Length: 331
Image (cartoon, rainbow, N blue to C red):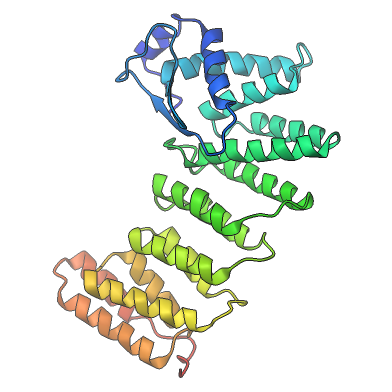
């Protein structure tokens, strides 16, 4: 959601009750849930009843844009008074205020840090309560990262906060389900905002955070995602990262993936730069055998022959210019 307000919205801020808006929105963000909230900010095209700021259908939450602005003003003042020592907030109230602030502004570092300090304070007390709070925080952040909130899905502050949560979980002995996190968080954020650099960087972080990672399973899931989103260069880049991993259990997976991608581009006659950058990168690193490299050249020629646009031809010719820096392996 853009923080810019038009004149009509600015005038509307004088109407309604900001405190009521804050209570309604903070309450829905604090709802206990086994799943993730799916949040969407609704503008003037959606009619709200008087003093109604939230629409809810299960995990799907629609929040009035005007109401969120009013709630943010209340939450920001509460946080400022808390940090200045004017009116310290109880833990639940501090959590509610910072949740509203991060929903309005995902780059509000002060609010994110306040939530970190709250969790650290709980860790000094009851460990079971701290772990439960840690899990709720993770679900809250994941809800922001995967909802239809354009700025949140690629917020460096939110992704950094999630990394911090995972590091804390590891220190407490809480296992990280890497495959689930990639599937349920990274994939969804990548769909919400294509070529999501921060999401795929987080995927790389996840691959180094788990002890027992089923790399072939992750590879299969990522390959399937790339096939469905074949114009997304960030997904292909992560797929290459997995193929180039030194500890991959089955080196044959590299050739298998390369061959399957070649089949995809030939059958669909793909000419987009993302997939061809992936193919020529794999071909140039010597991860494939001589037969696969020959098939790569053949696929490039076949697609080029059927391509009519000059821009597509330029991409395909660039792929042909790639020469292996390592002699293709004989398999």
